[in-house]
Length: 376
Image (cartoon, rainbow, N blue to C red; front, side, top):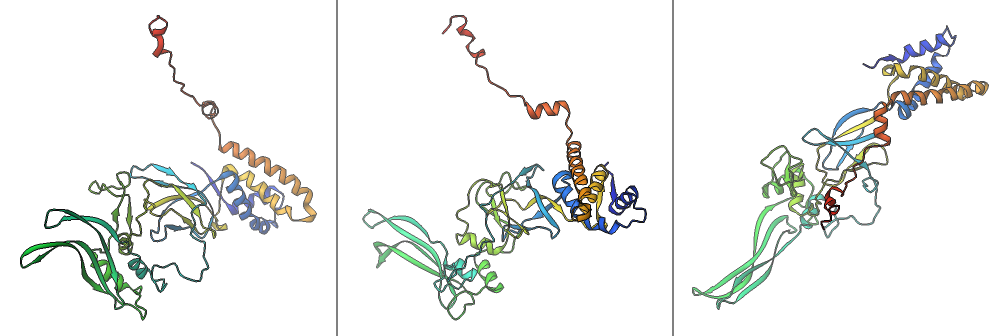
C-alpha cells in the first residue's frame, strides 16, 4: 500500500535537515508548496481523480469541478463494465456566440420561443397515396401530413388522403381530401407566437401522447447500450418530454448511426462538450485537482523530490540566492527524471513486448506444397 506524509510534516523535516531549527523558512515553503505539487503532479506523478459525471442531455455537456486543473482522460463504460476511450476533437463547439440581427427561428416573427420554433418548424410528411377512379383507372395523389397553429393558439393536425365522392349513392369520382382536426389551444402572445410556459409544454406534449419519462428511446439499434431486452430498436433517447416532442417535430431526423467517441473542452475550461445525441448517460473523467494545504498528502516515494522542489522554488526569485537556485534547479530536474523512471518500471519481458511486439506473418508455403511434387 502506498504511504503518504502530510505536507506540514514534510516541511518540518526539510527545515530540520537544512539546519533551520527555528523553522524561519516554514512560511516560505508553505507558499511554494502548491506550485511544487502542481508541477510534480502534472509532469511526473500524474495522480488524478477518477469520477463518473452525469451528462446533461439538454446541452450535451458536463460541469467540471471548480478545483479542476486539467483533464487527463475521458472514457465511457458499456453495460459489460468495459471502459472505452474518447478523444479530444476541436470540431465540437458550444461556446461560440453569433452576433446577428435576427434570431434563428422558424417563426415568421423571429420570436425565438422554443415551443413556437418547434411547432412552426414542424416537418411536413409528404407521401403518395393511391386509389382508383370509378372506371377502375388507378390514380395517385401527393399527400401532405402536417401540423399548424393559428394566431388564436389553436393547434391543428392536417392530413390528406384520397376520398371517393358519391352522388345519390353512386360513386362518381375520387378526389384529394384534406382533413383538419383541432388538437388543443395554447397560450400565445400579441403576435400569435406560442409562449414558453410550463402549461403550454404539458398541454402540447400530453396532446401528442407524451408524458414525463426517464427516457424515450428512438432510432438506431441499441443492443449494445441498453439493459432491457424488451427495447431492441433504439440508439438515442429523449431525456425530457419537450425533447420527445422535438423528435416528433423532426428536430432529430439527422441521427447518425454509430458512436462518435469524441469530446471537446469549453474555452472557459469549465465544461466538457459531447456530440449531439450522445448515446451514454455518464462518462468517466480522470482530472487533476487543486488541493488545499491542509489536505495535501505527499507520496513517500516523491518526498525527496518534493523537498528539493521547495528549495528550488523558494530561491528562484531571490536575487541573492541565484547560485543556490541553479544548484537546486539541476538537482530537482535530475530527481524528477529518476522519479519518473521509478514510477514506470518495466520488466525485461514487458520492455521486449513494448519495443518488439510479436507480429504474425501469414505463410503461403503450406498451401502450395503440392508444387514441390510437380502437381499444378
